[in-house]
Length: 441
Ligand code: SF4
Image (cartoon, rainbow, N blue to C red; front, side, top):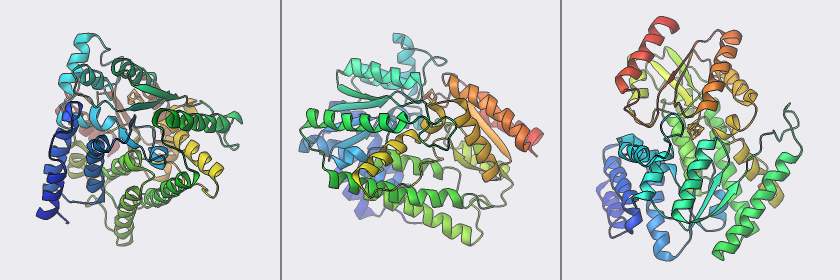
């Protein structure tokens, strides 16, 4: 195991010194926590990428480079191509859930009357409190999407209103872009590409930075190189026993949504692909004596980082991939600028969660039935946030389809992935253990 040596640790410590600005106090606290954690765990390209991402924001401030905030459903390639610095917001509002530091902010939104747990998702809701209390980073620009849910797009509108940042919104269409799909609409691709071009004009106007075709093509080539590695990684996870631990898919997703389009994302995705390939070749399973393969077609329970390792140890069960970690964007042709625009559009339309939640229920149901068959799944588990009504509904329908087509059982229950007080860690483990012991085995 490679650890962060003293010299590297001191280098990162030094880079993080000094004032980052009042609105970046929380951002800096998170960096300091990650650096301390990096000392005790394996230091790999993923951790290195995360540390650099934190440092990028104060550095951009110092150098006068515009920072653009975006949510977890849009990759930053276009921003890298235009030499802007991206800030993926959910690093904060979801990242804080890992250490329960989001909970006081959830309580504050309750107090000021901004939704409640069953109506608005706590993936973004605490961020409204953070901005009201002056603890949220204030970027120069904001981009957000109309999908995968009303909850997300509403929270970003509220953030935009409170912070007064100029924003651009991408409307993600309902229909498919592939002629082979029964929900194909010929306008889908054109509609997306036009919005990307409008976004570029808007960015040029707001920043005085110019769009250059060469830089865009280079970024899209890097994006697609990483997608090649992920495609191979996903294929390798079909091996029995599964060669990678339950949390790896999420790291792949984070890599692409934080750094997609950069050489770091290529390095990190290759790193995970190589380990998976080596383990698969040698018949090594991430879970010794693998007994159960689980599909988790929803988000992780972010407040309980020990849940999946617990499943691995207690039930010899591996979670193959969660809904976000199952990165389904395929590599594309990037030979011309127009092809790069198509790739950018397809990347957004097929993004994790977006691809399965943006249109007819069939997108999600078909995805899940194929997932269960392709990855030799024994059980489906979905602890679901009450605010996520559309996925809740689709999950129920999909579980029926899976039972009919494959006989594989599902466990779906209400749980707030971001708030440890709704359904506690103990209750979660009890429900999952009962399901495994009484239904699965
Ligand atoms: S978990 Fe559901 S409600 Fe929350 S952001 Fe994702 S799609 Fe929206």
